[in-house]
Image 1 (cartoon, rainbow, N blue to C red):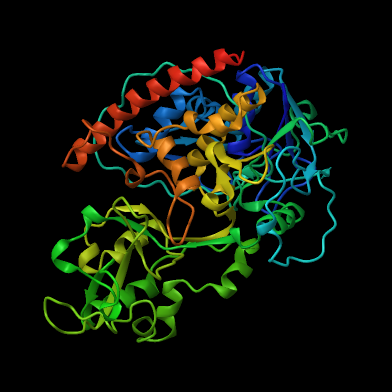
Image 2: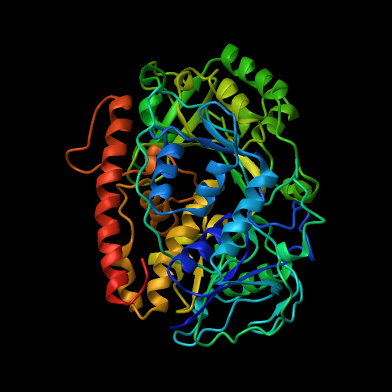
Length: 545
């Protein structure tokens, strides 16, 4: 049995360590806290929520609610802790931050199988089976560093760094009956999936027995599987090691435009075309007359913006949100992302005053990106301001625009099945580092990666991982498939949404409400089927399931 190491005790790392321990496996959980804090952390406890205390909707007929339903079935420690520390929040699941983090710590300690280490991983672990990919060599200079191959020194960070505004949920549909929970899994974490700034809940001064104990006697990388879940505030030394390994496949900030669902667009207010008629008509073009354009610009200028954290400020020096373009002058957007040149409206034969283009996010599916519309507007403001554009009046936002520091990789280029790094046999990744967005999404990533990693530790060949990947007919499976297999030309972090799901035969429906109901039934069926196969695999390799 291989040794197991999780780096980062945020949401992804804590979930991974729990899942490994539920399999009866001993795991080292490494984090820089409490001896060292990132700019966004203030608590000595794991799974710190440093943004919103809302985990979004708990209604199973919403994407975030369906994700939670699946995670409960898989015995998620994060959801178990959230359920017993919840505070009133309507249809959303919100928690008391301090009580939540302490509950996660208590449950992790109760396993007796988690070894806490207050240390910093300063470089990627050596591989002892598959050499590193020479083509991914350093092409990104981040300063001089000298980091030995598997050095871990006191301190780290956390992958619970980004919470999102709760997205309003439609549907007054009753929640389903409790589902029986089955468990097992694994994952090593690094910095943590709960880091990003204000309203920090301080747990400093906690009982010394409740915090990690420093220990520098680390195991060698040989015969050790490592799962890194360091999140958006990964320490500089580790980031530089990743940059040497992955070069331009590593991103340092997240500047994403909103994504909307195609079916929610107002059909009579957009047309398909490519600029100057070149190639195929892949873009959906939303024309604006002068009056609408000026109204849209004025709304951009007045809209409330998300606070820029002090440690994020440098990020925005080289990245302009659309509202800042609007502030530069009346016509700036018309000569930038909203330029109409070459996009004659075939219905009128005229060139619109301005055009907002929508680009398909993936080769299949109904997700469309608002081209050039990176924004710092609050989520509510995004709905209202972009709703001024006629084609977007009824738009369903599958992902909101964001701009913040966020270390993440181009998952499809770096990872293969099970979130294993392609160039290394012994290294797995989880949480926001892999390109999933949000508290629960990060935890779900750690949960599944750990379960698959546990089987590898028990002796399952790596080439069998593909057969154990959750299907895209489940929300978790669809989300993790995006992180590993997306063919998006501009890979950006993604939250759980219905646009990712693949509806199996017999579960399709035309009406949105019916599709959401079918999604729950489909998820239940395929999750049950997967669990049976997974538990059989655990039995085959002598793992507790």
